[in-house]
Amino acid sequence: MTQATVPERPGAAARVPPAPLMGTTTLAVAASAVLGGVLFAFYGLQQGLVFILGLGLGVALYHARFGFTSAFRQFMAVGQGSTLRAHMLMLAAASLLFAPLLASGVTLFGGSLQGYVFPIGLSVIFGGFVFGLGMQLGGACASGTLYSVGSGRTSILITILGFVIGSVWGAYDFGFWTQSALTWKTVSLAATSWGYPGALLIQFAILAAVVVATYAIERRINPPQRERPPSVSGWARVLRGAWPLWVGALALAVLNAATLWISGKPWGITSAFALWGSKALAAGGVGVEQWYYWSGPHQGQLGMPILADRTSVMNFGIIFGAMAAASYGGNFKIAQRLPWRTVLARIVGGIMMGYGARIAFGCNIGAYFGGIASFSLHGWVWGIVALAGTLIGIRLRPLLGLRVPRRDDSVC
Image (cartoon, rainbow, N blue to C red):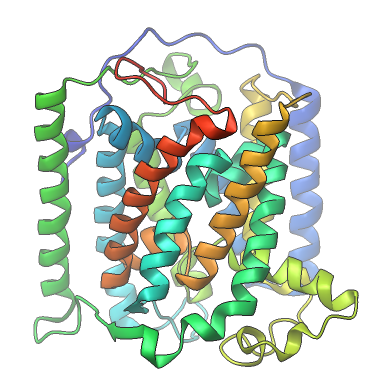
């Protein structure tokens, strides 16, 4: 699959971003340097490296405005498939990079390495659907909440609060959703006599079919052109402007593969929310260590320091990376006031996404991106049901005072 499959269609002329906010940029860089120094000094080389990868992810997500919530909404509401095609390029590149790493099974440091391959079951179907619905109410997906907060949209902290609540709730119910009666079969595209070469062929065929389908839908519907965010020309665009979608797609694929190679697992986000919330409850005397989630598949993790948790460290990196990128681009601005219905939508949407992510083995990053790139069929199932949830979420938006995209909208 080539870059030509995801061209940015010419939209409205790009605006020039405002002048850099050097004070905020300096603060973001200084905070990153301090936290990075602490990680390298006290938590080891691996934790320091994954923090740097998190910084890179934050920069890439911000500059490419690489959305999952908006991509699903653009496609389901107005038939605009350019960002969804960027997803397919991202998944193709990540699959190509993941395959030799998964085949070797060894990290950079000699540890074990494995992808996100999980069973298909009711938890994936229900959880993915609820997540898709919730992200249309919450205003952002898992990765979107982090880079939005970093870029100054502090109102999204409400969504993150909901994420934490929902993630803890999902951890509490995890044993119910993963019982054998509700869990069916684990399917890896690589589990054939053809191995990973065969899995890549199957994967590319599916990805190409999705790309062809989006073009066919666009020809029939004739959606509006995608509006471009503020940017500059020349090399200054690298640090001050908006990146083409294909650049963001390839950057995320490379950084996810690097995460797999260094840490032994693909990029994830929402398990940290469950950890933060559960630690808070444990500090208040709640016996969360007795829950199946913490006594079974995640045994021992509850007692770890936050900075020893790979996912938490990467989340902090995404926030600081986006903060540095947004402030240097002159676009860091803290939100002041929100209508009460928007606050309600964000907390409800966050809870739905947190719960859905926990029971579905991940969010738009862990289940969709990481699952598909790991050649697990559950990732494709998650994507399909999340699109269905998106459609319902779009129709529910007016109930909470949120705007529903029109057919002629270039921004959704």
